[in-house]
Amino acid sequence: MTPDEVLAELTALTAGDVPTHGGATMAYVYDSGLAEVDRLAAEAQAAFQWTNALDPTAFPSVARIEDDLVGAAAALLGGGPGTVGTVTSGGTESCLLAVLAARSRWRAAHPEDHCRPQLLLPVTAHAAFRKAAHLFDLAVVDVGVDPVSCRVRPDDVAALLTDRTALVVVSAPSYPHGVLDPVAEIAALSAAAGVPCHVDACIGGWLLPHLDAGPFDLSVPGVSSLSVDLHKYGYAPKGVSVLLTADPELRQGHWFATAGWPGYPVVNPTLAGTRLAGPMAAAWAVHRWLGTEGYARLAREARTATEQLVAGLAAVPGVVVVGEPVTTLVALAGTDGLDVLHLADEMTARGWLLQPQPPFTQPDGSRLPATLHLTVTAATAGRVPALLADLADAARAAAQLPAPAPDPGLVAAAADLDPAALTVAEVDGLLAFAGLDGGPLPERMAPVHALVAALPRPVAERLLAGVLDRVYRPTQPVPPPPPR
Ligand SMILES: *Cc1c(COP(=O)(O)O)cnc(C)c1O
Figure (tube, protein in one colour):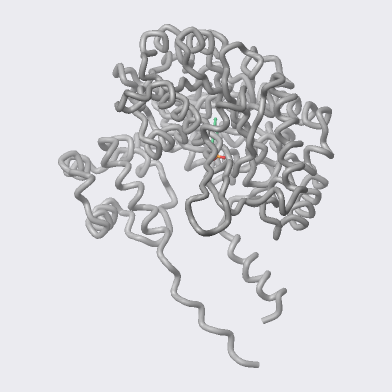
C-alpha cells in the first residue's frame, strides 16, 4: 500500500464519528472556529511528535515550553511569587496529582496516624477526584449541593472538615451544571482549618479571567492549587493541562524520584514516564498566536452566544436552565413531563451532540434532575438560532414519548446482584438481556441511561465497565491486500 492509501483507510474509520469542528458537538471537543489555530497546532505538534518530555536535560526546548505554559497560567490565574506548576496530559491527571500532593502533605503532618485521609468532595466535583481517591486510597466525604443553585454550601463544608481532611475541592465552574462554587468562603474555611483547597478550573480557567463571574483563582486566600486544561478553552489539541501549586513544597508531594534500580535515575513530575511534547508545543503555539487579546475575544464570543442561548431557551417549552450558568456551560432539565434523555436522542437525530447526565440522588436524599450538558464554544456562536430551532422541534417530539423506563424485571434482578462477584461472562449475559448484545450501541440511548439511573450504583458501575469491555475487544487481523 502507499502511505496515501493507508491515510485514506484511516480517514474512512472516522465516518461514524461525531464532528470535531463546527460547534454541533457540544461536549468533548472545543472548536475555536479559526482555521489558523488548527494549522498552527498541527504544525507545532508535528514538529515535536518525536520529542520525549521525559528528560528536560536532553530536550531543554520542552522544559522551556512547559515553563512558558505554567508562567502564562500563573499570570492569568492569580499566581504569586511562590507559584509553581506542572504540565500534565489532561484534566484528570491534573486533578489526580492535586490529590496526591495533598495526601503527601497530610501524611507528613500525621506520621502516627494510619487511618485513610479524607477528600471533601462536593457531589458536583468532577469524577476525576473519585478516581484519585480510588487510586490513592483516600475516603471520599460527599458534600451535597443546594438542589436549586447546584452550588456547594460553605456551612456544609465547615461541618465536615476534620483532622482527617487532606483536601477540599471546589469547582470553577462545575462540569455538570456550569455554576461557580463559593470559592472564597470555602478556601477561607479550609485555610482556617489548615487544610489545602483545590480549585478545579479545568474547564473554566482559560475563560473566567475574561468574564466577570467572581473571585476563583490562586489570588483568593486559602487556595493552594488550581487545575486548568489547555485542551479545552485554551483551544489546544488534546493532551495538555496545567496544575498550578501555590508553593514548591506542595508540588514535591506529587513528584516521584527513584535511584532504586540499575537503570537511568528517574524523576517524574506526572504519572507518565515518557511524556508527549507535541500537545505542549501545540498549546504553546496557539497561546503565542492568540495572545491574551485573542483569548479574551473568543471568551466573549462564546459567552455572548451562551447568553443568547439561555435567553432563547425561555421560549422552548418543556426545558429549564438549571442554576446560574456563569461561563459557557449550560445544563437543561425537563419540565411538564418532558424527559431530557429523550431530548438528547432527538437532538442526536438532528445532528447535535448534547451530553445526557442522569438524575442523581444526593447524600441527604434530595434529587438533582437529569440534565443535558451543553458546552458552547466560539464555533457554536454563529449557530445559536439553528440550535434553538432544533431544540424547540426536538422538545415537541420528545414530549410525545413516554418516560423511558427500564425493564422492571431487570431492575429487580440487578438489585440482588453482588457486582464484585460477577465474572466478565456473566456481565456479558446481563448486558445481552438488557438489549446491549455487542454490535453498535442502540440508536436511542434514553432507555440505557434510565436503566443506569435505576440500578444500585455499584451494579451500574460494573455494567458500565461491561459495556466498555465489549467495545474494547481486539479486531480480527486485517487480511493483507492482494499482491499487485
Ligand atoms: C474536563 C474536566 C476534568 C477532566 O479533564 P480531562 O481532560 O477530561 O481528563 C476535570 N474537571 C473539570 C471541571 C472538567 O471540566
